[in-house]
Length: 496
Image 1 (cartoon, rainbow, N blue to C red):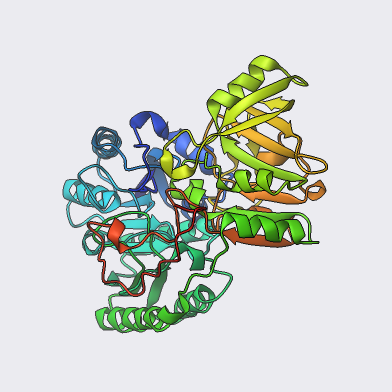
Image 2: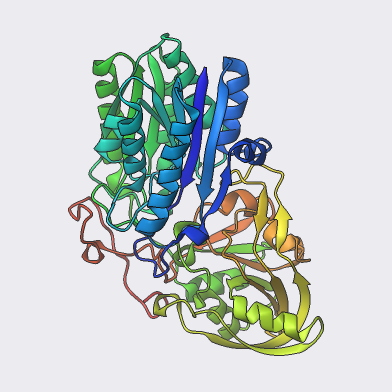
């Protein structure tokens, strides 16, 4: 079986001020796609494993991904999508297609970029070639994607640690479809609720029992896949919000019945989705008082994995103001990192850090300290962590010891925006997490897989930024603003 493979992923935050251009994408072509993913936990690794079992010949076209930020430019999208279509033409006849797409890509002029990619592939190949798609758990699934794909499989974990298994599942469905053993039939339900990212942890209620229900459903005869996407609230698009997708073997009535049942279960927990999250000031105060070390502060508003800048200063400002001791904060600031490189290790520096992207992420802070270490920012993660990646690059990175409290803190300044999905982001620059009192991670749920093993106490922080969890319907133009319940916490000086 000749199966074309392409990956094109971006989580697009329409409230972020930084557009995503072609230069922001890391793109690999041909056999590089398989070589790069084979030893990872990504869904393409799952395609590779399943291909060996299913006697499939994978024909990789490309894989393209970029760190979440603002919408993808039309030029970047058309270039990459065009290369996928050109690659399909060059391959000649294929028996099927596997597409690793995110599900929350927004393009200038195209609200649902992933659905548009599937539409273009379908238009080129015709109706007879099966297309199976994998999606991130934070997908905003529109009806048109269901119409053009044969099957959709969505991650079941957040942090995302099951990507490889979902890739294997998708490839198996495609192989069985090509052989004529099954005929996938899908149904989509969009529950009329906003599922705030604060509640996206699949290891805790209210999402855990819902996802367990979907997992049990897949054990029933005739069910090929049962998925729940929590949605992505930072994309102002028509179909923003959670989705339930059930794929059966040629049984439309069963797909409808079970999708509606799961959708009703999502709707039934709507009154549990009430936010009660401490501000940066309150969170830092709690961390200082805690006797569990290290305590990790999850900086929700500056969630890099959700498209925020990575340079907000709300948490750092409170650590300094409250004279906290033994803290570690990472901030994306290429200029400050380069200033440290120019100064050299052991040299005193006076820096202006953070708050340089826009006014939404706080004000720049004046910092004085000593350059402790310098690094190229390259590190590897061998364990199963959010995103499934193994190789990471945070660019030229400096660690500055900042006098504060009785012993000071450590400020990590990197040159490339990197979501804190691996604890090696800080261990690679000489920081031992167990020796610290307070760690700050610029993320929401994703960092848990990396930080829970080393941190007995995690505190969510209602901080400001492009991923502010309290953003309400008045900020949206395209999304369905009637969704229940768009809870807005009180605005304070810490997150406005």
